Length: 481
Ligand SMILES: Cc1cc2nc3c(=O)[nH]c(=O)nc-3n(C[C@H](O)[C@H](O)[C@H](O)COP(=O)(O)OP(=O)(O)OC[C@H]3O[C@@H](n4cnc5c(N)ncnc54)[C@H](O)[C@@H]3O)c2cc1C
Image (cartoon, rainbow, N blue to C red; front, top):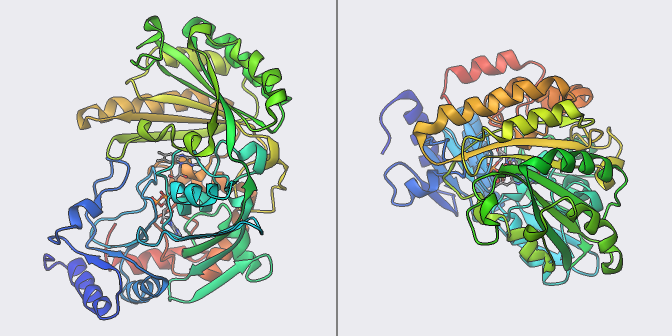
């Protein structure tokens, strides 16, 4: 089952050491479930791990970590497998796969939930909505909660209730030597700070303890603006959002009009701005904010209705299917000046494919009121977040899409505020990790050095421990990723 290389020998030893005590599934090349288990969301990342340890319980995570770290096996950790950069897999090494650990427990009276480290956003939404509560998270229900929350977590409710990580009260984490650490405001507060934005750098989180909020439905308004109206729309949006209440979230995607019956015929396949507005306030005041915004859209494309929270959370699921090829670059703007808008307009007419889009969101609100030093999450001060997301299916189109994103990013970069959201980074951007954390960097390095001095958890937007050169040398003799 393994090919006799040095790497394969180490993996084989790992398998035999684990086999005796593992409650979950061990999948190796040749196992009937192995090929399916290799795939992660981004079809660009086609790696073949030497062993996939699909854990059934915390003890499995502890055993896998103890054995892998003692043997020096390169190890990826996977929750939902949605890392755009593909960090939740590796070539030849071990994958600790948490997809069997999806328990969610809700305490409706306390408005709290505990969920396991393998949960998808949908598992949490379904459990919390049974009692009319929400955990603020992302906009696609098949995304993994662990990766999203540990990196920060933005979504429809960010302006109202803050980032996902702002709503975490505690974590249970397993370190590389298999020890369990409880962290919250009182226990291991340094780690509690670092896990709220610092990603998977410190260990495997097996349980999140989070705050919930009452919400069962929202008003969802949508509309399209034709190419000639996009400049006016973006100028209006940037000014309007500066004074908008926290109940309003307004996202704009610049893309080609989809070919479906809801889209006016003359906009199909043409560059458009697609606005989605979510209103979480009272229905009496909704029109005051939604009407002016929708007046920027073509009347024959506008819709507005009350939707359940579950409908909101799943409405984009099919737009981002597993196995497509994706590439992204992202950044913040402190202000969206007219020159930047001109660059975006010029880019719209050269979009390389129907699903590729420029995603624009306005942060602000509750997320921006948390003090910059309170969590490890990067910049909260720049309200405009831009994500360039290429989405295509043929490998032959890789170069065209990647170079389109890089070219546009380079043009926009001078107007951007330094900083990037780690969860919107590609695998070729390790040099931007320090930029993502900026003044929080040294504190993150200190926490990393304390809890993961060997940089065992390094398949992530990596914060190396302070003596990392030694660490790199150690791994160089074992297995490669
Ligand atoms: C379709 C799609 C929609 C998205 N929408 C949003 C959005 O609305 N808002 C937003 O903020 N982001 C969004 N993202 C980005 C998302 O936050 C990241 O891709 C995130 O990493 C996904 O988490 P995951 O658990 O699925 O990832 P995985 O690929 O499983 O893991 C990602 C990283 O987290 C680490 N990790 C995973 N589980 C654990 C754990 N239990 N303990 C420690 N480390 C762990 C992994 O090692 C890896 O480094 C979206 C991504 C996709 C693909």
